[in-house]
Image (tube, rainbow over all chains, first blue to last red; front, side, top):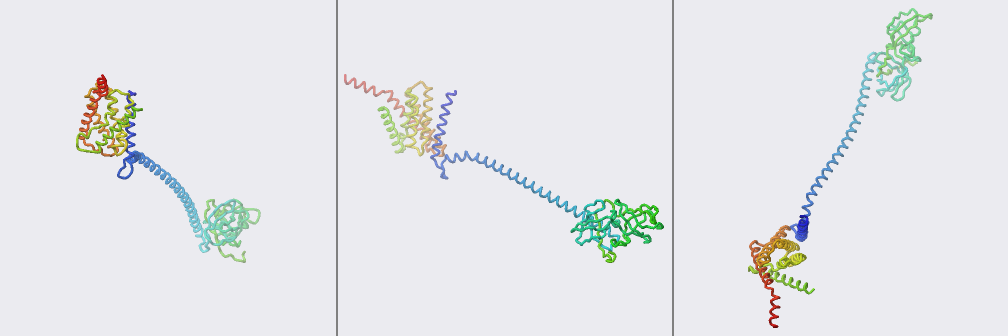
Length: 267
Length: 168
């Protein structure tokens, strides 16, 4: 069977070969030989498949690159979003500081003041950032919504360092609301103040509000300073009084730096 | 060598005859026989060596050079026909004059058909109408019958015998 098939196959091959030879000699209307057109028609499907595959690969590459571009754009937008969020937070803080400072100004609107944001606070020292562009000077009083907090001790650009009244080195002239009792308040390092030079016969009670007297030449008179926390008698001619500072809560975020013309003689 | 030369000479003569028939292109039916056909028909009929099959390729090539616009259809037609003749004669046991005539007619028809087929494949028209093919097949059959008759007559041995008789 195999021996019969081989000559037939050989014969077929010879025929095909001779047809190819004949086709190479015949030219079509377009000037190319029939053999070339046969080859073209053989190659055309393969060519179209290859072109389709190539187009697919190209489209895939384009999609991959566009995906990379999208990822890059997404990252860029995320970064911009983060920056905007930070900016929004800062703006919110500034707005809050302005609101709190306005709240503080309720007590003494005629004095005006520069809003400032609290940057850090430790052991009676505050670091503020001035929100407005007004010039701040040393010894300018700083108030919170509750009352006097302290005074400016250092200025560097917009950054301001404030000494709180509760620091042992700080002191303020105080008086009762009716002005009959006058004295000096000194910091004790905590949240309490020690009132000095309060005579034994002074009519003072626990919880009484103490205002600034202005006798120190730094703080303006009439601003809330502290409330009396404890009173005890001593052998000295003065009472031993402790008062709690009004402007020393831990959640301070905004303050106002008061700018007022001091009496040069008082300084 | 002398035999080969004589064979080539007769082959050339046959093709010249065929060429003349083709050149005349008359409408007469006597101009249609394939004079070349006995070259592929006689070797299998006389049970000659198988290598004579390859003579069909040579006949086809000369046919292409003489009659066809391109090389290829003639070789295909003559070699395919020779293959079929060799195959059919391997099945047939008789070698009478009828076989010569019938196989000659069938072979002529096959030559024309294979030629038309191979030309059609490459997009060329064969230009041979069916009636002409039939007439050609019949004429070729007659021609092959004549060749067979000559062979059966054994003219060389008759001449030889006649000479001997004269010498006596």
